Image 1 (cartoon, rainbow, N blue to C red):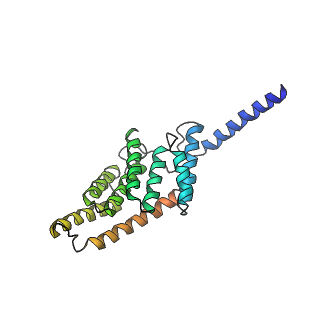
Image 2: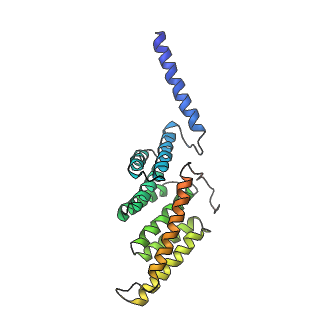
Image 3: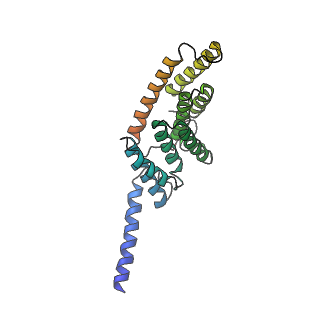
Length: 212
């Protein structure tokens, strides 16, 4: 009897310890289930930043089963697919992240919303869908209006549309290639920032109107 009591007490102590550790994490919205999803995303971010894509994908897929972590996991999968040159798969994951975010209050997860729109624009631009890219960059700016990289890439997308139109069917315009290189450079800079920030669970909870 005493042995069973000791084991039960040990299990309770273990659960308390895990929850106490979770309290040290920022933005804990729920209990231990939420913190487990967050830990999976943080581990996946760490691996993805080091190019360990397969291991990171496995963790993201596990994290996608946890409510609060699901949009972050889908977004992380989208970034990996984009890095691997799988643009269609990347767009599907970004779209799923966006679908989940639409079910949440507008004031929450604003940085993730911005990144999701921004990198959707990056993928669409790389596929030559300049109109779609421009729309995604506009959506990113609606979330966070002062972001220079999104404003610059919106301008490049609009310029690419104009030059493509002026060149006629089958033409890309004289400056589109150099513009694409510039846009890709913006993407590299953004990825470096994301990789650095990916070591922690970012502070996403901002009130509406608090642009960065």
